[in-house]
Image (cartoon, rainbow, N blue to C red; front, side, top):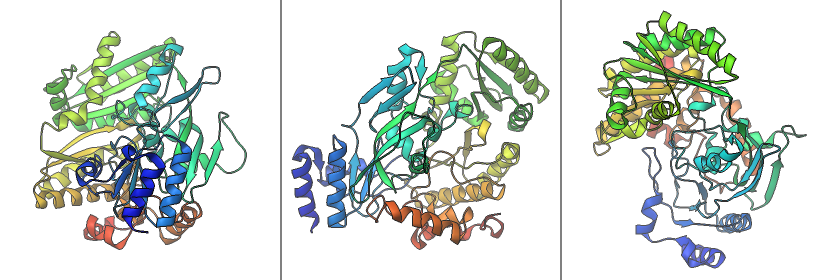
Length: 477
């Protein structure tokens, strides 16, 4: 079947107005928030699960790939078509189907915007806990695909901890349901297996999520330091004290100054780093923990620990954090955000290594990250129009991720593997590990769903340049 015939059949399934295939229309869908690009052959907008299933069956017959896409805010190239396939966009599947207040559950379609769900249930004193920085734009379907996190998932858990059921279209076009509103179900945890699978196992078309009740009390603290090391050491000691904040975020001096200039959030322009700490719970518990956190920060060199005096001040501090990556865009034409994870006790030395990488490759790196769970987000500043800068930037990113693995960490905490990091998977997994994952993949997906993602290929290894890493960083520990 020619691709022109595929276009004709797609138009017959959805209507011509819901199928894009002209080059000028496809340009919008050839990229996400990563540095990779890939032009699709067609972009389609289904409105029901049955239409998604029909699309996949057509793609299966025509041997054309299918790539699911949410808002395109992903950072690993997961929603980009690598072989001019069909990109399925869920803009029309954006309804909140049910809010079950008694059981603290919501049933939503994949195109529902993350923040819209919390706004819809706020009148019941509930919210959806995973809150990526792109919360105002990203969709629940994309969150499920990438197992997204966010600043407020340290205590509550990332997306997989809040998804209890899914409806999914498999690579054959079959429709299956796993899980539901109950916390525990019998059999294999297939719901958990699909969450974070990046659209390579199936296309999620309906999601049942947990809703969390708002806490009685909240305390938001801003600890101010002269050096990055002092802030990093505070993170280690807060963990050692047995305190688990709702959020524990860190910004280095370069980042916080840029954020302050853009948002006027109240960050001190002359500091070397800040920690943004949020505590939730019963009022007495929050007050006790706030005092403990303040003590830890002061012992580790904080020159001041401020507490937001009201909701307005709290919202302003978080506005600065949530808008940080947008603010960093003021420093350079482009930036490349990484997503490595290290044990919290290794944060200080990881930041020092990132500084070494910055010098090694001649690139400026800004640091803003989820310090509480060791999820590092170095933003490497560069000019995408300069091929040499792009090459050095990608190499620097791979170097940082390999170092994270060497410390017992991971190449991703919430951005996913996609096409950006698939060449680095052998740093974490040996051939047997990858073979097991391949066999699980093949059981659900005969090959049409989001190919050339997650698993390493010789071509992706060359593109990423992992072979040029220092020998001590090439093998998993």
